[in-house]
Length: 162
Image (tube, rainbow, N blue to C red; front, side):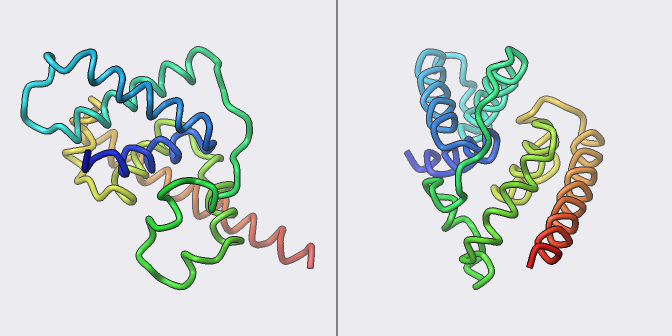
């Protein structure tokens, strides 16, 4: 039960859509319950995140893309995910962040969310996503650059529209 809020945040981060996130979250919990005998008893949280990541990959691969994202403040648990800084409560900043996250590939977004939002180490992310640690580091670097670029471009656009 203690892992469910983190799973909801991660689902929303992967999908960018509240309804799709809820579907992904429920599918993950259902899959975990169906396959509970295959859990090796080492890291339940990592196992759940791996299930969710794989289900999301299948969703994206199958072309069942979801509509564009909903406002950040509508996502359950995400508004409180920040560090409590005043900027984290700014709805405009939150919408800009979601829009910038939407520019990232699902693989880069997954790595970024696991490291930054959930606090996983590079090694833990590598195990959860079943990729080499070097791939984690390169995806994280590209995701951070892409996010910064998207936020800078959005800032330039929003400043010219004033």
